[in-house]
Length: 357
Image (cartoon, rainbow, N blue to C red; front, side, top):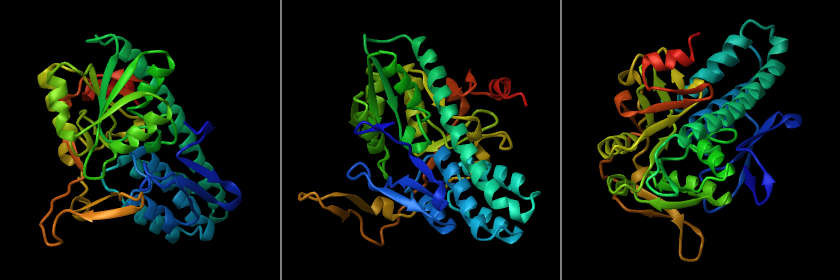
C-alpha cells in the first residue's frame, strides 16, 4: 500500500533491533502513527487493545511476539508461557492460534540455542506468505467479480468492518479483489459500513481514500435499504474464523448483511486465506465469541471541534451493556469463499476440494 507515495506495510520487522514497527490502528483515521514493539508483552498488548487487528495480522504479530520472547530466554517454559499469553489475547481469531501452533511445532524439537534465530525466521516466513496469499486472493476475487452481473456501468460493492491491508501484511482479504479491480481499470464504488462500536469501517474508508477508490461511508443499519433498492452488486467481507462446514465468524453485524443480501438476491462473498479455515471446528456452534468491554459502547472516541482527541460518554457507567465482538454467518447464506487457491462454495465439500490435504 502507498501512503503519500511511499510503499508501506501494516507491520515491518526491524531485524537489527529484534523488534517490529506497527501502525497504531487505534489512532486511525485521525492520525497515522507508528509504534515500535520490542517485547512479548508489547506484542500481546497491541493485539489485545487492537493497535493491530484483523485475523491475519494478529497471527503475524503473535509470531513475532513469540520470537521476541525467545530472544530473552529460549527455554521450554518461556516458549510455553509465551504461547499461552499470546493465545489468550483474542480467542475468536483462529489465525492467531494457527500461527502459534506452527511456531511451537517448529521450535519445540530444536536445541534451545537455535530457537531464537529460527523463531524470527519463521515469523518472517509467515508474514511473507500472508502477503502473497492476499495477493492471490485479489487475483481470484477479481476474476470472480468479472462474472457478476452489474446493475449499472459501475461495479457497486459493499463491505463490512476492515479486511484491507491494515488487517493483513499487505493487500488485504475482502479489499484485495477491490484493489485488483481498480488496478485493472474497472469502475468500482464501495459502500463502507461503519461497523460499530469500534468503527473499523473508518479504517476501510481511510484505505480506499489513499488509493483514490470511490466509496461512501454508511450507517450499519442502512445496508438492507441499499441492498433491497438494487444499489449493490455484491457484498464481500473477510473472516476471523471459517468452520469446516463453511460457517463464517466475522465482526458483529456480518450475519445481518448476509440475511439482507439473501433477501435481495445479491451475492454474499467471503475472502480469507487458509490460516483462517479451522478444519478442527465442525461448524459455527463451536467458534468461541469474544465478549469485549462495555465501554466500547458506552464511550465514543474521536476529535473535538478544535481537532484534539476526545472521548464522549454516551451511556452511564452503570448501564448494562452486552458487547459480543463477532457473529456467525451460516454457510447457507454465503455464496462463495475466495481463498489464495481459488473460489469455492461455502461447504465442507467446497473447502476440501481446495484443501484436500
